[in-house]
Amino acid sequence: MPSYKISEFNPDNLASALSNKFTSVDEVKAKNHFTYLIEYLGKEKGIKAGTILIEYEYISRDFLVDYTSYYASCFDDYKKKCKRIHFFENTFTDQEFENFIVQPTGEQEDFWKHYLGFIVAKPIPVKVIGTTVLKTYPKSESASERIYFGNRSYIVNLFGNKIKLESLAFQEQDTVVGVCASTAIWSMLHKASCNSYAILKTPSEITNDADIVGIHGERMFPNKGLSINQIAKVIYHSGLVSEIITGKKDGEKEKLKNAYVKRIIEAYAPVEIPLIFILSVPYITPASEDVKYDYHAVTVTGYKFAEVEAEQPKEEISWRSDRITKIFVHDDRWGPYARLEFGTAEYRLDSNWSKALKTKNATTLTDIIIPVHHKIRISYDDVELVIKALDQILWLIFKKNLKFNISWKITINYSERFKESTKKTYRDPKSVLLTPMPKYVWVADAYVGNKLAFQILFDATDLAIGMYGFAMYFYDEKFRDAFHTTLEGNPGFKEFFAHPSKEQFYNFFLEHSAPPKLFKGGSMHFDLRL
Amino acid sequence: MARNTTHIEPIAQEGTDSLFKEGYTFELKTFNFESPSMKKAITKAHKEQEEVRERKLVDVESLNRVCVV
Image 1 (cartoon, rainbow over the protein chains, first blue to last red):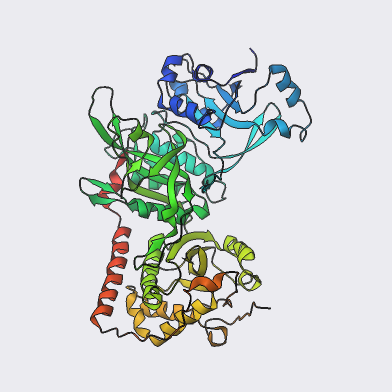
Image 2: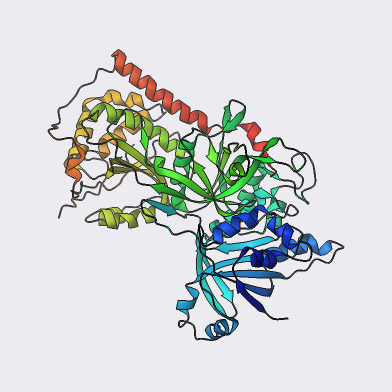
């Protein structure tokens, strides 16, 4: 048997490559994944695949563990070896390919830059899409930008050659060792395990970690789904802890507002651990024409935002995250980097689930699970409530005297990365670089229009009932002095903070906005205007 | 309580002078925190923060939602 086969990328060849003795070409073509992948890989809207290369006799570690935990003990003769289907943008013959792979490393870069990634085709019935690592859409377009915070580097070994690719692994649920939640956690762990404190596990290991029985006492294998509680347990067993945000009932269903969801995504993206969203998705079963809704877990891998024009000052608080137009999720029932689009509606999300129905029923987000390092104890909401109080104070001080509206961006980050960023923004950043800081800091950026006016740092490892403000850095002297003087002359502003440490928060903002000669908050004092 | 941190002197960046509308000069305003309008502003601030606090509460029932699709 040859070790590989090259063919043109087209629907028939892809369906044939994914098929196996349990799954016909027509059954492959009937899958949502197939429709999705043809578009994602296609020339018109996708990443422009031109060639398919099938690598036979491929051992997939993920499938091998699942195979030994379930398929090996079946009576039917399931194989343990997979096919790996590679995609290339360019076209080439067998002879040209063999000429390239024998060239010394470093002399083949022109060839591998056309590499688009791979799909492992599993030798099981219907649920054939195994580990999939595919290139993403370009990061920048004319007036918008894509942030793939869930991506990591993969080294793909192919016939003695190493190819580097930025992506995040995807696979579809097999409905045996895991369903959507297990595969969503598996994708998340692919990125989280780049950190030494998190452990990568296979879908069957993930399902095993969830519990000994399901929430109604049923067996865990074949798996029928995980609850949010069980997802949190798996995350804990993988070296992380979970922040859980649950939607409250609004009408008939629980749901989270889109504007808040955008803030959460932007807030947690810098620590680069994918979030898990629980969606309420509409679908039709083969037995009925009625639209059903069920809960479905997906992994959030990135988002897209567009620049917007600065607004005039207004009393209501504004957020930079309102610029986010869509998010990218690994949806194991469709494919990698599937789009969830925010419309103008307060709750509705447009997904492949909604688009697949004639009635276009809405998809909604019911819950968010945020896997984080255990030392991140202050949550996004802890910071937002302080910022909401401060924003009202700033409105009363400046009203419409500012040229543009103040808008906020709240993000969690490693303090080391924050320090590194100051090399670009401060003329002489060494005072910041030399300041001892906690491992994680929340950073609240206040923009006036599109200009950064000041930043507030919060200690993310602190207590929520205490005063967790850490530092303030101003970019505009006139703004700082007006803020400080008004705050100093009006101690009553502390009443705006509905917090047990309201006096300490007032004192923090007062002291950290003081001109250097009056500043009493620290022993180190720098004048950066050298 | 303020932390023992570095205080950064503002850095004049190109264009940051234009944060304020033309002709703006700073005058210290003293607010009467007992006035109805300020009491209303404080109540509004508290209400918004209360909404954030309520959002932090996990709905226990939701923890048993099973992702089945």
